Length: 161
Ligand code: SF4
Image 1 (cartoon, rainbow, N blue to C red):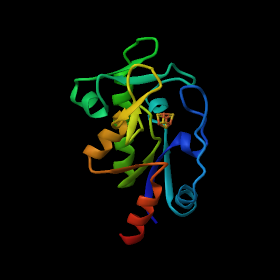
Image 2 (cartoon, helix red, strand yellow):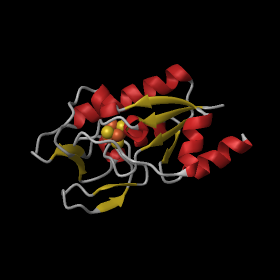
Image 3 (cartoon, protein in one colour):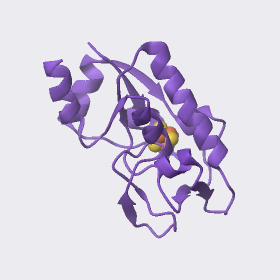
Image 4 (cartoon, rainbow, N blue to C red):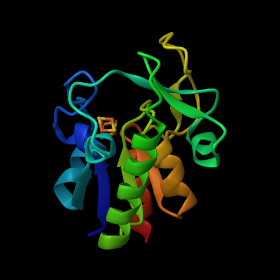
């Protein structure tokens, strides 16, 4: 059994910016929750952001650029929320270190938790390829990040490790 960090909103916690959770209908995700040791976290709420909160997107880059200091996380009200997102990423890594976690399943498209896609930073509803701040930070630290859409890959990995 592996310990897996999982986005709290994938586990039914209503912690998204609009006070909702993310519904997941997937055999692989059900397998994950039923058979592995799950450590749940919402990095944005852990960093002190409220529920509900203004939506945020990464402006002019992805999580990698935010970590490098060349892009910022901006709210739809134009407030700079970067420090909250960096703080959430550090908390996520701390939790992984504390529990010796090597894998995470985080919510796709989020400016924190997205691993393959994020919104394009213009609040247009369009997405672009890239990772959120938490996923980029964890990946840089050697933790493999999956989304709710590719848990099957993690399942294969755990099955052979
Ligand atoms: S995607 Fe991540 S930061 Fe956003 S609500 Fe879910 S757990 Fe929290």
